[in-house]
Length: 167
Image (cartoon, rainbow, N blue to C red; front, side, top):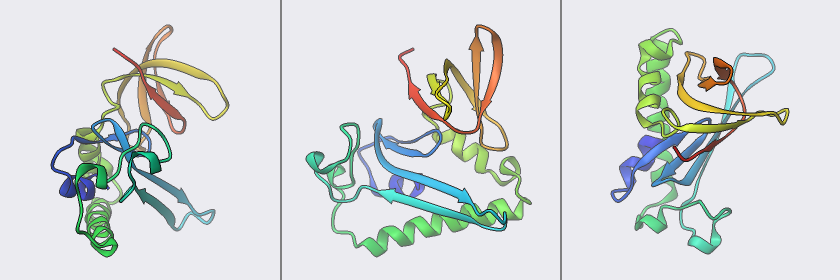
């Protein structure tokens, strides 16, 4: 989705907030969700993109839309074609590398666009526990690696909400 958004927006910095948000200048423009089927033989992907909303029409104060970045004159099909073309390229590269995110270049693309890696973060796990540290990277399973100082350790986070903290 970042490639799709980047190709449309000229006045903003597009980045990824782990685990599933696309940001423009720090504001959420898109969200992505993926879930593997119980059989393990397919993944269902859902993506949302704020298109024509004004600031009052957005779901949260820290959201934005294509319209707020002066992107106009597009058809919904144009956006879908760009998104699916980007997804197809990433998927084919991933499959060609036998599912290796590093060999396929997927990991480096995500790290390049990440606004989370390198930031101090508060991690809120699904069970309600929290901890903070510096987002140090991603592993090959897409887990966020968080370096903590007390105790000194690196935790791999597979699911949770991430809040960026001031450095």
